[in-house]
Image 1: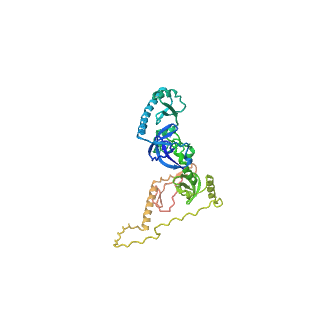
Image 2: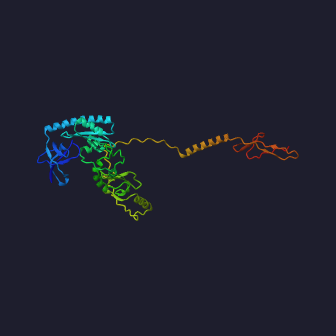
Image 3: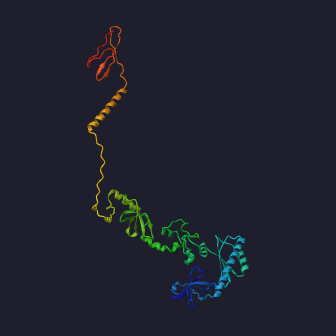
Length: 405
């Protein structure tokens, strides 16, 4: 075990270990430390504490002193000079028409070197720019090209989650992030939705991967054929964080989706196993195919008894209202007489509308010329027949034929 302090530069970025060199340094204190570039002004995030030997990357550099008011004043002057150097460098970039974007400027604590950070899509010939900067500041100039992720860490900002960037808060190093991590976590594979402000995949996909890998081991896959307490069905969706899955049952009667926890599901297979179950169920050989129905829990009894409750006694009964009198019905014989009269009147109207019968003629053979004799018309009323030329005759009398001409 080694005693160290944790410190970072400019209150962001990676945390480094330094040897306290016998000093007791509290947390949240500014210190002057020795680095490979010389003395630097740093911020102590964690005071004296013990760490394992394997966590130390040699050489372990010492802490020179706790920052004095003079050191703090000097650090503030360097910040003011950084702002002036940033504006001057931007003007020179525009004059030389260089394809580069200036991100940040950093003065060393001793003021013997100025570091310019920029981003660019390709290589940039900035030799003329370095000459102008060296002539202006009369010190050592260094230009360093960085990536878009380093740019986001230096500038800071808010992510799509509404919180400050992880890289500018607590991430020490950038780890490689792949699209497979988004698949494991069940996220959308649209690059716009899983990318950060820098345009790269979000860093949080990396340090949350281990938690999701443990959850995926217990969770069924989508379209898996499972056995549930309510019957067999297919998994439609999975919620890893809640440990629940939505299942569509194969009963055919219940079309709603039901939610079950991972512990209540028994995975039987995939889509092929589901097809075997449907075929076996249609043929009535579920046991032969290896599908054993689980005993389902009995429904809970209703709290109310099945027997009807006894009626409550009425203290002051009121007399029932009188029923309305019904209209007396006519005897069936009168109704039949009325119907018969209606039928008779309809028959008489139909007879009046019928056309008169055509005149009948009869031909009789004569001796030489074959003249025809006309038969008198008859009117049928009440079973009697009348002739125009003769008087009224009794019923049943035969008509006399006309004399031969």
